[in-house]
Length: 362
Image (cartoon, rainbow, N blue to C red; front, top):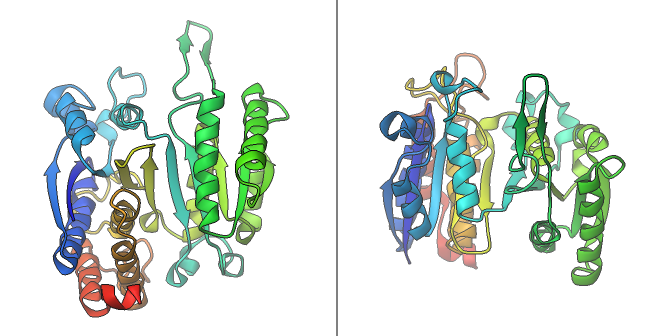
């Protein structure tokens, strides 16, 4: 297979972790006979500094032509003024909208070595395997905004079509897993949530009768997600609720440095990124955890390129590296932390030692 992959290193530790993921993708391509071609482009603060825009037209043009997009992180203290007219996160919101990437997938499956790093009691985390599907291009983040001297407003709107397509995506995922979807809303207060609940109920009843659907209010979901996370399979929700709940869910895994994500639309191209931020305090020190970005590359292979076996190879290699004790500072015992290069090398070594496509296909 030939594939064009646009790499958007971004800011902070973004260049370090995307370099690691590209190295792993190149190794997978070489090992399994694929030609992955990489081109780098600007986004976020780096793009603002170079062009004055958080998403230059050249970046968007390249992304539209690519088979997939791999992103590092955006943002940093030098661009953090919320009153600034141009900010790094605008580039991320804009590329999602422009590419029609309406569904953000965030899997949470804690690795055994990270259980002790989580603030949640380890016995609650055994067997947790869930995925949050967050609607990504609608809701309050994209609604009309007003500001006056003594008031401000943000409009939250959703259409039936926007809700239908993300619920369908969640149900399709659930069919490949345990067949349960939890839809999260605030239907006791918000009209948009009442519409959300009605549409979700209808879509599942009419199109996915094999799926078990339950509804949860977002406030109770925030509690249940930590108290009984094993009960959940696929969680689907609107933009702002999903933003909050996915950060909460990251605590189940013990570290943001272990969690990947995929942003998908109707077409082939997707945007793949770790859920962590740019971590400017450690940028340039070579100690960032690359595992989340490497696992995002696995999602890229699975969802944009249809290379399920190769994706599983990367996930297996990361598991083996963690099992072997190659832990970066965010999950390591005191004085035993591996740096970014060592963690990347461990994944490459495990790919060589354990990942044979023929065996996995058998």
